[in-house]
Length: 211
Image (cartoon, rainbow, N blue to C red):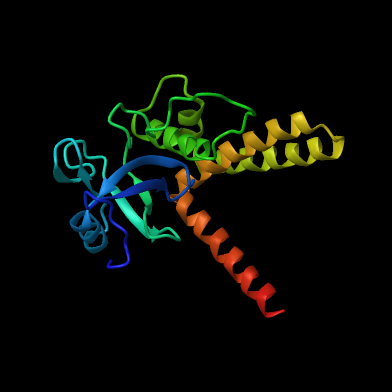
C-alpha cells in the first residue's frame, strides 16, 4: 500500500461497482486503515469525512459489500472495488447512489435488469402473490417450466426466420424469463452461469493468444 498516493488528508477516493454488472454503485473515501481492513476482511470499509471515523459498509443497514477484487488506477490515486452488493448501496434505498440523471443521449438498458428479474422470481418463490404467472409456473413444476422453455425457444427461431427483429426481441425476452424460472426450480444461480461464460471467454482468449 506504500504506492497509494494519499491526498493531504490521508485519503483516497474509492469507487464500488457491481461485480456482476459493472454498474457504478457508490463513491466514498478510504484512509490507510480502511483499505487495510478491506483487504484483510473482504468487506468494504471506508472513512467518513463528515463523521471523521472509519465505517464498515452495511454495519447499520445490513447492506454489506462483499469484495471480489480491489484495484488501484494507473496513477495509484484512486481505488476500484468490484463487490457483491447486499440490498441497496445508497442510503436513500436506491440500488446505486448515481440515480440523479442529468441528461440522456441514447437509451441503453442497464444489464442489471437481468438480476432484477431473477430477484423478482426469488421473491415470488418466498412471498407468493395471487395471480402471479411466476408462482403459477413454480407450482406447476419442472415439466411445465421445461415445456415453456422449449416453446419459447421455438418461437425465437420462428421470429428470427421471419426477419422481424421487434418480435425476435420480445421472444428472446420471454425465453430469458422462462430460463430464469427454470434456474430457480433447479437451484441454479445466475452467477453459476456467468462463471461458465467467463471460463469459456478466458479459454478462448488463451487459444487466440497462443495462435
